[in-house]
Length: 136
Image (tube, rainbow, N blue to C red; front, side):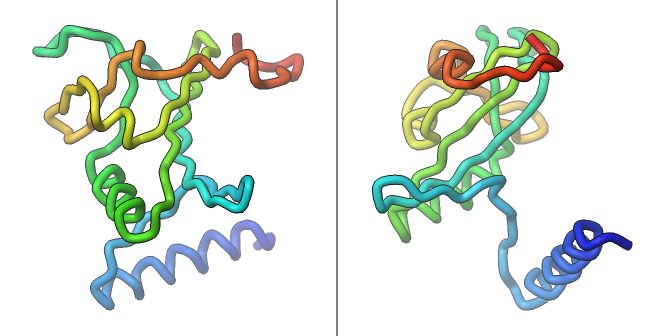
């Protein structure tokens, strides 16, 4: 077993222990520090949610359980969460602060995914240098 696999196994074991101790446990994708301020990053790579089933807009979203804990993190520590979406198969990249998304229009699916309209996000594609095998 390589170190990466051992690390993942240890994280899974720690998750079980922490849940047994009563913790609500999630792993943010990234924690960043810029200008002496921390930011929590949630990164998704998925297809666009398209209008229908009672929702009148296209968008992207996040599981409501993740939103709940990220809002708690913000309220208790001041650490904001930035949601970044890599859209497949088109290759667009969107991003926005979760507290801004939560203050606007949204739709909650039957699976408790909160969808935010595309116009609520910033287009981030121009901020990245794409490798030759980049989708998009």
